[in-house]
Image 1 (tube, rainbow, N blue to C red):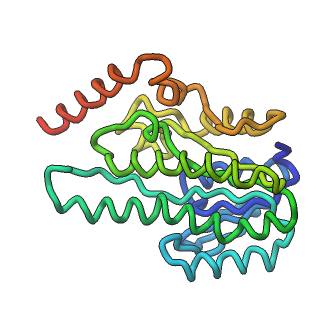
Image 2 (image 1 turned 60 degrees about the vertical axis):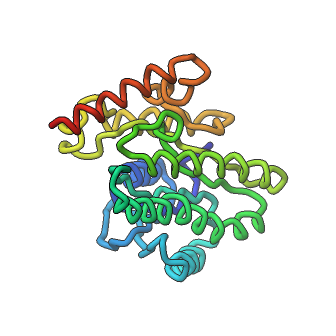
Image 3 (image 1 turned 30 degrees about the horizontal axis):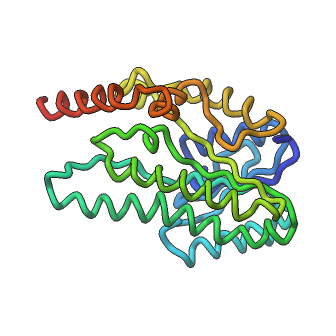
Length: 248
């Protein structure tokens, strides 16, 4: 993928990994628009539009605004997501589960549905979805989050097949734990630093051909745990972490 000539819309790109990726594309020469609930300027020549992926009307309004200003749009990134913890012993967790599915799964589908007709009509372009290492190797404390990201992976696979003859590519970005703030790093010292993560991502995206799944080194053990026979041990380790947290 040539990242220097794209016109990119990143839904959920006003902070964190999404904003970091937006800045990398902009620095390479691409035109970048980010969407989020907040519409404060983010700098670096990046445009901002308002979007709430849980609101169908907001998604359509954002699409119309982006395509009106940038009819050459050729890359859509579905970055919007929430990561929430749950105690499955308490039925009150259901509200958290609903929010997680609404944002991570249905929000992803809404954004894809809004822009896919445009990409198909132009006969080329890329949809980039964002799943997670937790979608392949669950962390019990984030039950619905893991399920939602497994759903994004499965949906991405199906979308790639259905768009195979359209000229539109589907790329799935699979992040591990990434420290987007110093506070994140303090909470999880093992999290990959944002800039290091982005270095690897840009290298992988720039490959020819671009891989269907963008897997940095830090997520390989999650992605291939079942294949490598390490799944049960790694899930046990994560379960032990949950037990320690409950004991505190």
